[in-house]
Length: 224
Image 1 (cartoon, rainbow, N blue to C red):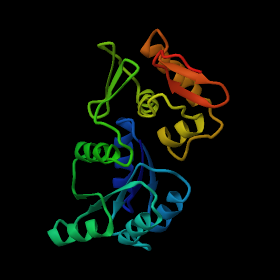
Image 2: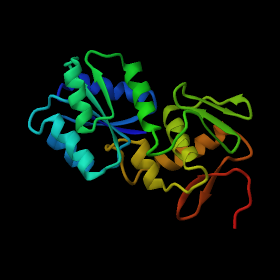
Image 3: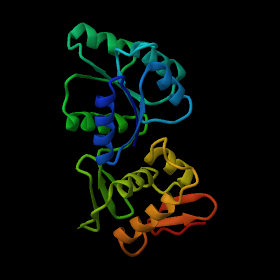
Image 4: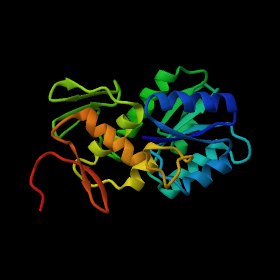
């Protein structure tokens, strides 16, 4: 999952970013509404964590433009205003969820996971494919009943591949969705992560390389 955190309080924004990274969620930061709109025009995000009271372009306007442009990402609004009227206003603008400050990071993570699997992507709470079971909420992976311990990036890459359900995912898409905007586009991190992920999952190899195209989960069925 890739998230854009739009928050003008630097300490809070960095705390959220670091916390999400520990949960295998790539997070970019935007300090204001204008920067948020610029990033949304360049990258595909699953969810936008949007502070409502932003300098410059207000959070309400950012939410409105996300909806108008049909970007497909979910919007979770953050605000210190806990009144019912404030929440209703946020939902009327097109927000998908609302979280008041202060909040606990585990609650934010659960809400993000829930938003990311809503019907737009049709992702079930637990993904099962090619004999592998992945639970994004518990951050657990099992293969043939055997628990597989994965590092954060390994988990993020596997989740993307499994939700594609045998479809080919390019290295560019993996870099876009599992790493943040500071990732070097010429990095060999994808190849290294795929290699180490295969080793963790064991034999037979569950991830196939499609030369010149990308990677896909291999369920053992014959391919044309």
